[in-house]
Structure formats: C-alpha cells, structure tokens
Image 1: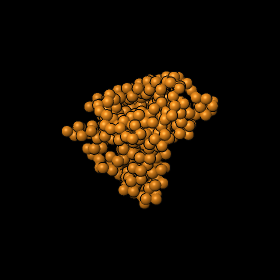
Image 2 (image 1 turned 180 degrees about the vertical axis):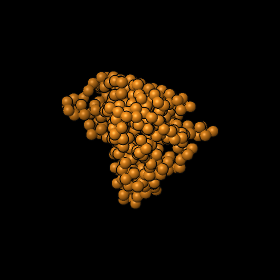
Image 3 (image 1 turned 30 degrees about the vertical axis):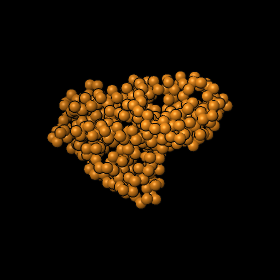
Image 4 (image 1 turned 60 degrees about the vertical axis):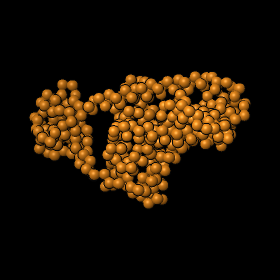
Length: 376
C-alpha cells in the first residue's frame, strides 16, 4: 500500500509541475491572441473532451495520467502559410512568440521560487549540492561532521591491497599518527617513503592494522577521499525579506547547476557512452519520492517539488531542439538572419531533438533500474 501511495504522489507531483509549465504557455498564448485549440490533462490518446470555453479551447482528459499539454494553432505545423493566418502562433511578433515559448519555464521557476520562500520562512535544511556548499555550511556551524578518509580504489599491483586493505576501509592512523584528511595521509606516507608503514583502519566497527610497503614516491597504491561523517544538519530559518532574497539566489544557482549537469550528461552519453551514477531519471525520482513520503514531512515534500520544478525549468531552457530553449534558438536565428527558418526544416530538427531526449530518458531509466537491482 505504501508503494501505491508513493506512486500516486509521484504522478501527482510530476503532473502538477507539467501542468504548471503548460499553463505558462497557455496564459502567454491567450494574452498574445493565439488560438489555443486544446489544453489536455494527461497525455493522449484522449479519453474525454470535458468542455469548450468561449475562446474555443477544448479542455480534455487523456488516458495516460501523467502531465499535460497545450496545442496552439499553427505551432508545429510544417505549413509556412499559417504564418499569415490570424490567431496562429506563427503569425505573432518575435516578442510575443518569445514570451509564449518561455512562459512554461517562467512558471516553473516562479513555482520553485515561491516554494523556496515558504521553506526558508518556515525553516529548512540547507541545499548542499557541491563540496563548496558543504564546506561553507560547515564553517557556519550549520553542518557538524567528523572528518574521515576512505579508501575508494586501488592501483594496479597495489601493495596495500596485497596485504589485506579493502575498499571502504576508513584510514585512521599512519605509523601511530592520527590522520583526519586526505592531505594528512599523503604527508604521512611521504615521510614513510621506502619504509614499511603501519596503517590503522576502521572496517565495519572493527579496528585493524596492516603493515604496508611504501614506495620511493611515498605511495602505497590506494585511492583515498575525504568522506566526512555528518553528525548534525541544522535548519535555516529566515525572516521574510531575507527569505525572498535567499530563495532568488538559490533558484538561480540551482538552475545553473542543473543546466551544467544536464549538458555534461548528454556529452558523456554520446562521447563516452556512460552515465554518472549520480544521475536520476523517472525511476530514480520515483524512488526518492517514495523515501520522502515515507520518512519526510510535508515541508520535505514541498522541498522536493521546488527542486523538481526548478530542474524542469532549467532543463527546458537549454537550447536543445524539441525543448523550449531549442524553440527560442529558432527565434534568435530569426533575429540574427532577419528571416525565419523553414517550417518543415524546423519540424525535422525538433523531431531529431526529441529522439535525442528519448535516447537519454531510456539510458537514464536503465541506469536507475540497474542501481535498484545493485542495491537489492
């Protein structure tokens, strides 16, 4: 039953975010005088036409209970003649089409911003996305953590691995000297160059010691990383004026980080044919939603919605065909060249972009499922 509730919450959250996005297009189109032929709740095929308003827009309920869509007259047609027809999206000015195209992104950013204002006013844990974030909040006393050094990998023919050290061992001592950071371990090993050092580690609550030959360069053939053990994370609660400013800063920062991550994911997928384990798609987000609904508060759910809304807006503004940013790129082309791209060619480019996005979704979903099986 708990999984069923989580699935419903996941569908509701994503549907709200997509409907908010589509409402942004709808509202901007209406204000610009574009005829909106249909506002669909869910995705086709159509289950039922609910009603038509005075402007002729059909509000429909569709069989796939996920998200929604807006169909504007003359938006995706390959017929260039629609550019001269009244009420057509294609007939509007550059400024009007720009506002319509970016209307969905603006609504997602606005929703995320409002939710962040609520969260900072009510009190919320900090947004720790980068290592710099962690260090900053730690220096401010918001995060309390104990320094640890973990072995993450071994070099080929590693002396440390041969004597029994393992991945995830926590390095605590080098020749009896306590070490608390990556740099301290490196310094202690250099001091033991060409000798045998006694390495003390913590493994599953058991303290162990190993005699490891150190080479002339002061290395024992391991890859180590700082892995702080977080003891406490305090909430940040701000007066409304400060919350308004902080929410704006975080909305911009998180949007930029999301765009950088999304672009790097696409580049890695098509150049290295690999995906980072940190990347999550629909399945991964559904799992996060389940954990939030099971263990989190209502404010935790609002935080998830805010992050997803900002991420949806940020991804859509990237200039990739089929996304809003790709459509905006067509307008930039028109401004620079003083002529519109061919409607048929534009449709083909967006179709290609959609194919790229579809490949990405499939790859990320496969990655999510693989991580689920690995965890079990």
